[in-house]
Length: 158
Image (cartoon, rainbow, N blue to C red):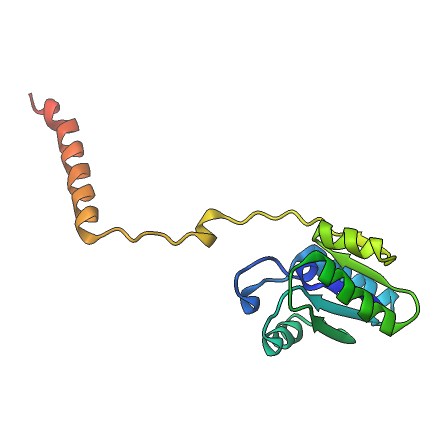
């Protein structure tokens, strides 16, 4: 079985349901799904709402033969959970994660592991809340611009 950390499949966000699929991670999933005849699993580092995780997987067509959560983000515990899952599945196994510390721990446990590096850019307006300008500030700016236009033409009257 090939075990994916959920972070390989989804871009970061505070809420699990609001995470968008990562195109490269999903491409990797779909490619390996065909090659491994669907023997893929998902491991979430942390303690999410499993119903929300199931819904996310259904909506994004991620059909795993199993999924589980670690209950923690501590690298050693995550690697041990991945090792237990892969040992129970038997046969060849591999683990994909974006956290280099978890990959290091998994490799130390003898699990063939791959660090997936996915660069992405979060636009500032997506994470910071915009301050709404008050109506008085808007009208003041409109008045300033009207005066500036009038002053520009003021010397033309002579």
